[in-house]
Image 1 (tube, helix red, strand yellow):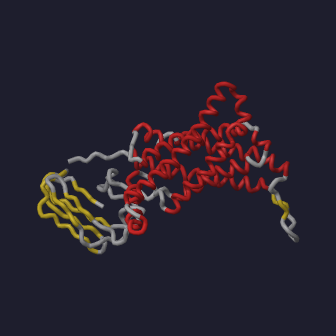
Image 2: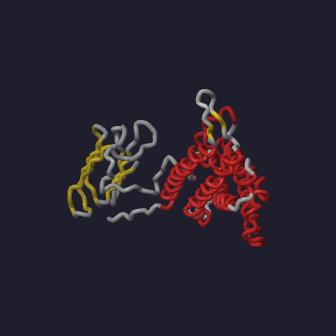
Length: 344
């Protein structure tokens, strides 16, 4: 990590680390004119006591290494950020980020470990990128087909298209959602650097709606809410998967990148709202049919309706919304966070 101070012509800076506290003191010309500038910074966790610094005409670059390479919740021990301390977003990396920089570093690490037993790093990298490119391409084509199909049918048939959405695109949606399991596996085994939890929550949530709520009850398959659930799902994915495709070949299309990090803001909550409506509409249907309900054994003999689990799922749905929304917001902030201007 590097710290920078905006004072010119620093003379003989005194920089040291004692008891995990960085001490800085130097004389130079800065915001307060010719003066002695100093600060003390206590780190959150242990660091190596040998700081390295480079003195330039306008600033001092200080490099401090952690004793153990791991993610920190914050830089300093005190929870409140010091007023003089500002993050450099050009160098910032977050544990939850699935950006191109982390992908490249992870690929290099994996390739070095497997180089002797599995071949050259170039070959492994090419195979991995090709595999990820094809996976994202197939998912993009599948969700694009669903999105275009629903859009065209709506313009031709109007509201009438809502009621046979499931029978029109369900097979393709089944395919895409079953294939989405690969995405979670990739994150779990380290093929991609994406965090596992958001991917797993989305996979389980969507498949519960698709296979249980819609798939097992014909009464639900004819409801208009199916159209909105499928439409919002596909609308998000037609921007997400091509973004990952271009990442695999080290391309960055600014318009697509902006859409990938922005379009979810209105669409993701609307998709969760549509899922919640579908669950609420399914409760009386499951109660009437008695499907998946059961009676506890003697001596309790209490009938447990499946609608109870649907109500629990509603709570979990909005909990998952918070977790994924927070994850996506952090990704967007890291990509487009405001960078504070340095004043000299």
